[in-house]
Image (cartoon, rainbow, N blue to C red; front, side, top):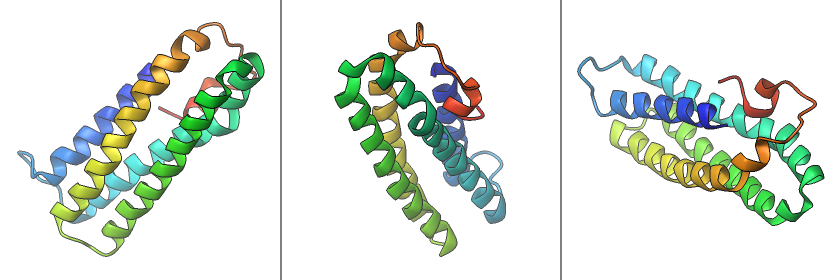
Length: 140
């Protein structure tokens, strides 16, 4: 989980840097690809958790029901924020508007990752998953 979160943080940083006009700013088309790639990776990570990881945790640790509910709520909130970011990209909104969407998503993502790691990393060390970890945590 930590490794996947680290990769998603790196992807977010790359997109932020590109929007901020890093040393070699990408074309608008490349920026859209990077943003959509980040959004897809984040979405697939959360879908895997919702579909595979959280049910396995709930079965083994019913006392974590409320924690899992909060994490699932965060996923829903991030879907909403991803939709806003993608809409901004579709409308070819200025970089500062795209950046604002990305910052909101990044703030929620970081808070979510920290909470999730505190709440679940120890549990995951002993959890037996019946699926490939890539299905449970996403392809990263």
